[in-house]
Image 1 (tube, rainbow over the protein chains, first blue to last red):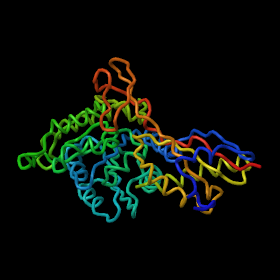
Image 2 (tube, rainbow over the protein chains, first blue to last red):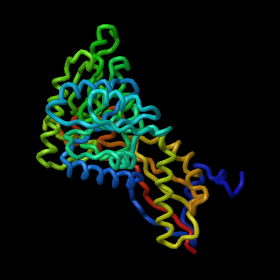
Image 3 (cartoon, rainbow over the protein chains, first blue to last red):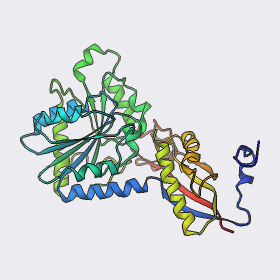
Image 4 (spheres, helix red, strand yellow):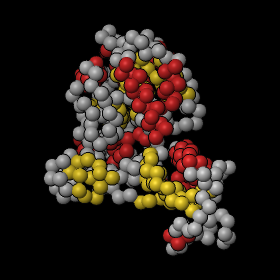
Length: 259
Length: 115
């Protein structure tokens, strides 16, 4: 034990050690550690709204089918609205190339080792990626059920995907990200016949335990089952953004569920 | 996983406060991390000295203020304690609740050497 590195401070004496003594001043701050990110996110959100663009943050574990969902969405909605996509991955341009193959512009952010996108990365992408003439911007976050939930990007809605190959207790294991969702999509339902231990109503039950009223939509991007319910939800959000109703990202109240 | 970058944001805020008060050093910072903040308190504690190194906050202590997780029921109005993956009303069991506290990720106060 010494007096320099702090190893002499134990839970028992910590209060004594840090009681203000002569020559010290305690300053009350009460400021969120994410203030810097949140200010940028608010700026991004206003930017999207000025362009009448609905911004959607897609979150899930890696391989839950975010890019496949986007491909199916582009095929179904491509004629009625103009879509653009920002892709977030640690490495490769692969996902952006899949989206471009559908005739939609895509900007790839490679984060290196960062486990999530933040508002500044999205802002940087917007510099290189004009929003003029678009209706919906999908931001496909880095596949990760932990960190993306903590960073507001400026999106209007959060969409969390849960694939049937993952286990129906994921919402109970990763409550923060599922609670943030404005809609939860149960993906790859075409595989349900092969996965008899996945119970969709149990998954929805875990979601409801998080005090979430978000719609729970089972779908298969490959077969097209359930896609219509997802598209209807999207159209509802688009109407809301076009009416100019301001969105606030509020993790406790599901936002504009039916538009 | 992003605790180090949060600590860097924290140190930036501490530096700003220290500069505004003309401090010579920082004794401790007090931070509140709610159970639903998506941040691991022990990782914050181990990352903080690295983020503080080479700044006016070097050598300062981080104190974590524990925050309870409470929800207010929209059905019966009761405020009860909850678990991160079970945010139901503790009184009537309804799932229409709002989190009252537990999402905080906040710098509460800074103690400075000013003399």
